[in-house]
Structures are given as structure tokens and as C-alpha cells.
Length: 108
Image (cartoon, rainbow, N blue to C red; front, side):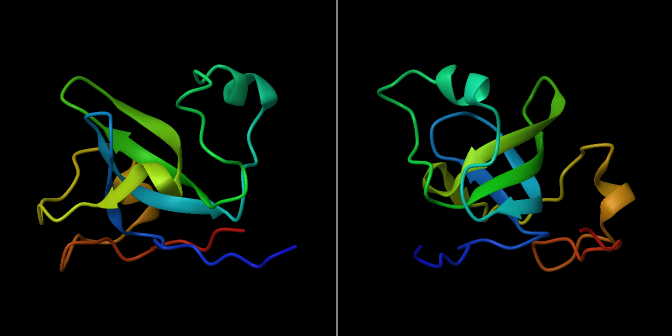
């Protein structure tokens, strides 16, 4: 099995390439590690490859806050320099600075 390095890291703010949301990374899976039901719910022509990092995000759009699970191929770095408004950010991260959040707690 080929070792894969994640392009993004915990505390970075990223945007989805196709959908209008952004979020802060709070966990990374080295390859797909969600349910088959979740994977099969994605239209086949949009389905990402399983053998790439997948990121857990505290995500937000103009209408809501939620947790998202996104493949690396569908993310780009957010360069807005703006903090997130997601209400769960303070539970995991310190104060926003220099375009990202420092991790405040130890995750498994």
C-alpha cells in the first residue's frame, strides 16, 4: 500500500471546489473511511476516488453550520483571511491567527 501524505492539516481553512462552503479541518483520514451508504449517495460521475485523504470539517455556508466529510481532490485552500463563524470552533481550536486556527485539544 502506498503511503499518502495529506495536503492540508488540522486548523487550516479550506473551501469546496464545487459547492459554496468552507470549513476548518479537525481530522483527516488517510483514505476513505465513511459508510458505503454515504459513498453510494454521491452521483457516480462526481464520486471521488477512495484512495486519497478525506477531511472532516467544521463547515459553514450562508445558511447553516454542519460537519462535512470531503475528499482532498474537492478542496482548495481558503485565502480569504476571514475566520469562521461555526459555533463549535472554540471547542477544538484556539484564536484565529494568520489565516488558520491552532489546535486547542488533543485528538486521537
